[in-house]
Image 1 (cartoon, rainbow, N blue to C red):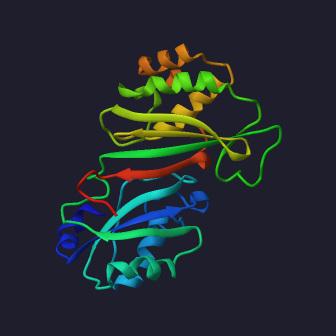
Image 2: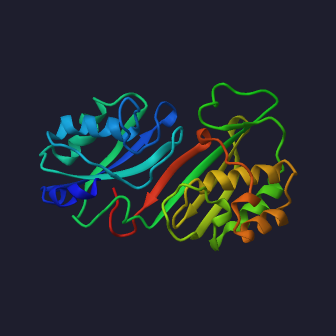
Length: 264
Protein backbone atom coordinates (compact mmCIF):
# COMPACT_ATOMS: atom_id res chain seq x y z
CA UNK A 1 0.00 0.00 0.00
CA UNK A 2 1.38 3.41 -0.97
CA UNK A 3 2.03 5.55 2.10
CA UNK A 4 0.52 8.65 0.53
CA UNK A 5 -2.76 6.79 -0.01
CA UNK A 6 -3.00 5.17 3.44
CA UNK A 7 -5.42 7.70 4.99
CA UNK A 8 -7.66 7.58 1.93
CA UNK A 9 -7.72 3.79 1.95
CA UNK A 10 -8.44 3.51 5.67
CA UNK A 11 -11.49 5.75 5.24
CA UNK A 12 -13.17 2.97 3.31
CA UNK A 13 -15.78 0.66 4.83
CA UNK A 14 -14.00 -2.72 4.95
CA UNK A 15 -10.59 -4.26 5.60
CA UNK A 16 -10.57 -7.45 3.55
CA UNK A 17 -7.96 -10.17 4.13
CA UNK A 18 -7.09 -12.91 1.63
CA UNK A 19 -4.91 -16.01 1.72
CA UNK A 20 -3.27 -16.46 -1.67
CA UNK A 21 -1.43 -19.35 -3.31
CA UNK A 22 0.66 -18.91 -6.45
CA UNK A 23 3.25 -20.49 -8.68
CA UNK A 24 5.84 -17.71 -8.91
CA UNK A 25 7.64 -19.04 -11.99
CA UNK A 26 6.13 -16.58 -14.48
CA UNK A 27 6.26 -13.51 -12.22
CA UNK A 28 8.84 -10.94 -11.20
CA UNK A 29 8.16 -11.56 -7.52
CA UNK A 30 5.12 -10.54 -5.53
CA UNK A 31 5.63 -6.78 -5.22
CA UNK A 32 3.97 -4.51 -7.80
CA UNK A 33 6.16 -3.70 -10.81
CA UNK A 34 5.97 -1.15 -13.60
CA UNK A 35 4.59 -2.70 -16.80
CA UNK A 36 5.58 -4.47 -18.97
CA UNK A 37 7.21 -6.27 -16.00
CA UNK A 38 4.47 -8.24 -14.21
CA UNK A 39 4.36 -9.29 -10.55
CA UNK A 40 1.72 -11.24 -8.66
CA UNK A 41 0.50 -8.02 -7.02
CA UNK A 42 -0.19 -6.43 -10.43
CA UNK A 43 -2.48 -9.31 -11.37
CA UNK A 44 -4.27 -9.45 -8.02
CA UNK A 45 -4.94 -5.72 -7.85
CA UNK A 46 -6.28 -5.68 -11.41
CA UNK A 47 -8.74 -8.53 -10.82
CA UNK A 48 -9.77 -7.39 -7.33
CA UNK A 49 -10.60 -3.95 -8.73
CA UNK A 50 -13.09 -5.60 -11.09
CA UNK A 51 -14.77 -7.60 -8.32
CA UNK A 52 -14.91 -4.79 -5.74
CA UNK A 53 -15.45 -1.81 -8.04
CA UNK A 54 -12.64 0.07 -6.28
CA UNK A 55 -9.03 0.95 -6.87
CA UNK A 56 -7.11 -1.66 -4.87
CA UNK A 57 -3.76 -1.32 -3.10
CA UNK A 58 -2.56 -4.45 -1.35
CA UNK A 59 -0.39 -4.87 1.72
CA UNK A 60 1.30 -8.28 1.84
CA UNK A 61 2.85 -10.43 4.55
CA UNK A 62 5.95 -11.05 2.44
CA UNK A 63 7.45 -9.68 -0.77
CA UNK A 64 8.52 -12.96 -2.31
CA UNK A 65 11.21 -12.76 -5.02
CA UNK A 66 10.98 -13.70 -8.68
CA UNK A 67 10.39 -17.43 -9.02
CA UNK A 68 9.39 -17.96 -5.38
CA UNK A 69 6.04 -19.64 -4.70
CA UNK A 70 3.42 -19.43 -1.95
CA UNK A 71 0.86 -21.66 -0.33
CA UNK A 72 -0.15 -19.11 2.28
CA UNK A 73 0.68 -15.54 1.29
CA UNK A 74 -1.63 -13.14 3.15
CA UNK A 75 -2.76 -9.75 1.84
CA UNK A 76 -5.18 -7.11 3.03
CA UNK A 77 -6.80 -4.08 1.41
CA UNK A 78 -9.43 -1.46 2.21
CA UNK A 79 -12.54 -1.23 0.05
CA UNK A 80 -16.10 0.08 -0.16
CA UNK A 81 -17.06 -2.91 -2.31
CA UNK A 82 -20.09 -4.79 -1.01
CA UNK A 83 -19.53 -8.33 -2.23
CA UNK A 84 -20.21 -10.70 0.71
CA UNK A 85 -17.13 -12.37 2.19
CA UNK A 86 -18.39 -15.86 1.39
CA UNK A 87 -18.55 -15.02 -2.32
CA UNK A 88 -15.11 -13.43 -2.65
CA UNK A 89 -13.05 -16.58 -3.23
CA UNK A 90 -15.16 -17.87 -6.11
CA UNK A 91 -15.64 -14.46 -7.70
CA UNK A 92 -11.96 -13.51 -7.73
CA UNK A 93 -10.73 -16.97 -8.77
CA UNK A 94 -13.02 -16.85 -11.80
CA UNK A 95 -10.88 -13.97 -13.11
CA UNK A 96 -7.41 -15.04 -12.04
CA UNK A 97 -4.95 -17.00 -14.18
CA UNK A 98 -4.45 -20.65 -13.29
CA UNK A 99 -1.15 -20.01 -11.47
CA UNK A 100 -2.73 -17.71 -8.83
CA UNK A 101 -5.65 -18.67 -6.55
CA UNK A 102 -7.41 -17.20 -3.53
CA UNK A 103 -7.58 -19.85 -0.79
CA UNK A 104 -9.65 -18.00 1.83
CA UNK A 105 -11.18 -14.60 2.53
CA UNK A 106 -12.17 -12.72 5.68
CA UNK A 107 -12.54 -9.28 7.23
CA UNK A 108 -10.36 -7.77 9.94
CA UNK A 109 -10.29 -4.79 12.25
CA UNK A 110 -9.00 -1.60 10.68
CA UNK A 111 -5.70 -1.74 12.56
CA UNK A 112 -4.87 -5.15 11.05
CA UNK A 113 -2.05 -5.25 8.53
CA UNK A 114 -0.99 -8.39 6.67
CA UNK A 115 2.59 -7.17 6.94
CA UNK A 116 2.87 -5.55 10.35
CA UNK A 117 0.49 -7.75 12.35
CA UNK A 118 2.32 -11.01 11.55
CA UNK A 119 3.66 -12.88 14.58
CA UNK A 120 5.63 -15.53 12.69
CA UNK A 121 6.13 -17.08 9.26
CA UNK A 122 6.90 -20.54 7.97
CA UNK A 123 8.91 -21.15 4.82
CA UNK A 124 9.47 -24.44 3.00
CA UNK A 125 12.42 -25.18 0.75
CA UNK A 126 12.50 -28.30 -1.44
CA UNK A 127 15.53 -30.03 -2.92
CA UNK A 128 15.40 -32.74 -5.58
CA UNK A 129 17.98 -35.52 -5.42
CA UNK A 130 18.65 -38.12 -8.09
CA UNK A 131 21.04 -39.36 -10.73
CA UNK A 132 19.17 -37.41 -13.41
CA UNK A 133 16.99 -34.28 -13.18
CA UNK A 134 13.24 -34.64 -12.78
CA UNK A 135 11.51 -32.25 -15.21
CA UNK A 136 8.27 -32.55 -13.22
CA UNK A 137 9.84 -30.86 -10.20
CA UNK A 138 12.21 -28.46 -11.98
CA UNK A 139 9.98 -25.44 -11.26
CA UNK A 140 9.52 -26.35 -7.60
CA UNK A 141 12.79 -27.77 -6.27
CA UNK A 142 16.56 -27.25 -6.48
CA UNK A 143 18.10 -30.23 -8.25
CA UNK A 144 21.28 -31.62 -6.65
CA UNK A 145 22.68 -34.72 -8.33
CA UNK A 146 24.93 -36.01 -5.55
CA UNK A 147 23.44 -37.69 -2.47
CA UNK A 148 23.24 -35.44 0.57
CA UNK A 149 24.23 -36.32 4.15
CA UNK A 150 20.94 -35.70 5.93
CA UNK A 151 22.34 -36.39 9.39
CA UNK A 152 24.94 -33.65 9.01
CA UNK A 153 22.39 -31.28 7.50
CA UNK A 154 19.95 -31.80 10.38
CA UNK A 155 22.73 -31.22 12.91
CA UNK A 156 23.64 -27.95 11.21
CA UNK A 157 20.02 -26.85 10.77
CA UNK A 158 19.30 -27.26 14.47
CA UNK A 159 21.97 -24.66 15.20
CA UNK A 160 19.71 -21.86 13.94
CA UNK A 161 17.05 -22.64 16.57
CA UNK A 162 16.58 -19.87 19.10
CA UNK A 163 17.54 -16.22 18.82
CA UNK A 164 20.56 -15.27 16.71
CA UNK A 165 22.09 -12.49 14.65
CA UNK A 166 21.59 -13.75 11.08
CA UNK A 167 23.89 -11.27 9.35
CA UNK A 168 25.84 -14.15 7.76
CA UNK A 169 22.70 -15.19 5.88
CA UNK A 170 21.49 -11.71 4.98
CA UNK A 171 21.73 -10.48 1.39
CA UNK A 172 22.58 -6.89 0.56
CA UNK A 173 19.78 -4.75 -0.84
CA UNK A 174 17.15 -5.49 1.79
CA UNK A 175 15.42 -2.94 3.98
CA UNK A 176 17.50 -1.69 6.95
CA UNK A 177 16.41 -3.62 10.04
CA UNK A 178 17.81 -5.58 12.96
CA UNK A 179 19.44 -8.87 11.86
CA UNK A 180 18.31 -10.60 15.07
CA UNK A 181 15.57 -13.17 14.56
CA UNK A 182 14.15 -16.11 16.53
CA UNK A 183 13.67 -19.51 14.91
CA UNK A 184 11.01 -21.56 16.68
CA UNK A 185 11.10 -24.81 14.76
CA UNK A 186 13.10 -26.41 11.93
CA UNK A 187 12.94 -29.77 10.18
CA UNK A 188 14.41 -31.62 7.22
CA UNK A 189 12.36 -34.54 5.94
CA UNK A 190 12.39 -36.91 2.99
CA UNK A 191 9.25 -36.81 0.91
CA UNK A 192 8.14 -38.73 -2.19
CA UNK A 193 10.19 -38.94 -5.35
CA UNK A 194 13.61 -38.33 -3.84
CA UNK A 195 12.73 -34.86 -2.59
CA UNK A 196 13.84 -33.25 0.65
CA UNK A 197 11.72 -30.64 2.39
CA UNK A 198 13.25 -28.14 4.79
CA UNK A 199 10.73 -26.27 6.94
CA UNK A 200 11.72 -23.19 8.95
CA UNK A 201 9.34 -21.39 11.32
CA UNK A 202 10.55 -18.10 12.73
CA UNK A 203 9.59 -14.68 14.04
CA UNK A 204 10.71 -13.08 10.79
CA UNK A 205 13.22 -13.35 7.98
CA UNK A 206 15.82 -11.10 6.37
CA UNK A 207 16.25 -10.55 2.63
CA UNK A 208 17.21 -13.90 1.01
CA UNK A 209 17.80 -15.36 4.49
CA UNK A 210 16.16 -18.73 3.90
CA UNK A 211 17.82 -19.22 0.52
CA UNK A 212 21.22 -18.31 1.96
CA UNK A 213 20.75 -20.77 4.83
CA UNK A 214 19.77 -23.48 2.34
CA UNK A 215 22.71 -22.75 0.06
CA UNK A 216 25.07 -23.22 2.99
CA UNK A 217 23.15 -26.23 4.32
CA UNK A 218 23.47 -27.96 0.95
CA UNK A 219 27.24 -27.63 1.18
CA UNK A 220 27.05 -29.31 4.58
CA UNK A 221 25.15 -32.16 2.93
CA UNK A 222 27.76 -32.37 0.18
CA UNK A 223 30.59 -32.54 2.72
CA UNK A 224 32.20 -29.19 1.89
CA UNK A 225 31.24 -27.69 5.27
CA UNK A 226 30.97 -29.50 8.60
CA UNK A 227 28.10 -28.87 11.01
CA UNK A 228 30.63 -27.14 13.28
CA UNK A 229 31.69 -25.03 10.31
CA UNK A 230 28.05 -24.07 9.73
CA UNK A 231 27.87 -22.86 13.34
CA UNK A 232 31.04 -20.84 12.86
CA UNK A 233 29.51 -19.21 9.77
CA UNK A 234 26.39 -18.26 11.73
CA UNK A 235 28.45 -16.79 14.55
CA UNK A 236 30.81 -14.91 12.21
CA UNK A 237 28.09 -12.39 11.24
CA UNK A 238 29.76 -12.14 7.83
CA UNK A 239 27.85 -12.85 4.59
CA UNK A 240 31.14 -13.61 2.81
CA UNK A 241 31.59 -16.71 4.99
CA UNK A 242 28.34 -18.34 3.87
CA UNK A 243 27.66 -20.14 0.58
CA UNK A 244 25.92 -18.90 -2.55
CA UNK A 245 22.19 -18.23 -2.48
CA UNK A 246 20.01 -21.26 -3.29
CA UNK A 247 17.77 -20.94 -6.38
CA UNK A 248 14.37 -19.29 -5.97
CA UNK A 249 12.43 -22.21 -7.48
CA UNK A 250 12.57 -24.34 -4.32
CA UNK A 251 11.19 -21.73 -1.93
CA UNK A 252 7.57 -21.49 -0.74
CA UNK A 253 5.96 -19.09 1.72
CA UNK A 254 3.94 -21.73 3.55
CA UNK A 255 2.10 -19.95 6.36
CA UNK A 256 1.76 -16.66 8.20
CA UNK A 257 0.52 -16.64 11.79
CA UNK A 258 -1.24 -13.65 13.37
CA UNK A 259 -1.93 -15.02 16.84
CA UNK A 260 -5.25 -13.84 18.20
CA UNK A 261 -5.45 -10.76 15.96
CA UNK A 262 -6.74 -12.65 12.91
CA UNK A 263 -7.42 -16.11 11.56
CA UNK A 264 -9.41 -17.38 8.60
